[in-house]
Length: 277
Image (spheres, rainbow, N blue to C red):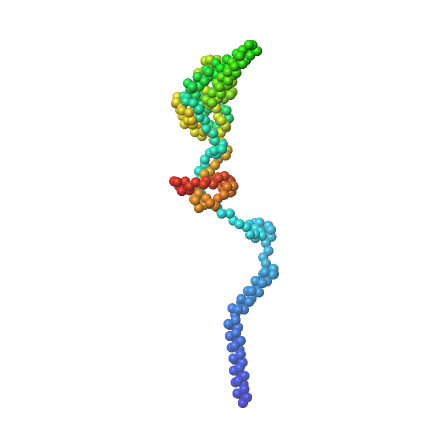
């Protein structure tokens, strides 16, 4: 009987030991996860944090900051062409038919306002200069004898003819300074029809499409003067992207060697028939 109880106790002990061993084997991963979770919690609690000195952070290039919500800009890239600022561009053209006598400025040259550019000669200008000399002499004579017994009609007619002749030279392309110098000389030999066109503004000679001796018709562009301190960039955008761009928007101009800030001045309202931009 005692021997039977010993066998039963031994069997129960063996079963209990196997159960404990099995529980310990199957719960090993769970125990590892629990231990790792406790270690992470300890790390978050500051018990196992790695501290780096400010000097070490600077040496390692570590920077910290506060996270903030912000909007990111959307960029639209497009090819562009640098063109002159039309608000700072001027052309030089004769108002009457004339012949080129001498070129006084060349392409690429920087000129100042009122600088002589080209010397011309015109038959119409010669006639106008002669008429001005005659009208000027009559006007001077009328003023001298004004106090004498002359008709007021003669005095007023002389003044009107002088103003007409003076205005014709202005309309033909001579300036007031040039006309006054011409009258001051009082030399009939200078009524040869020659006159000089001046630069209307300072800038760089962008084009000069003429040759000496050439006959020029009124309106022919002789010079194009551009102020290169301010330029435009004509960007070619698709019709879909152009609707996203507004006047005053910030832009960036990128070249092979430069990156320049810019602003949008105008969005065209016409589609290019060739490029469809």
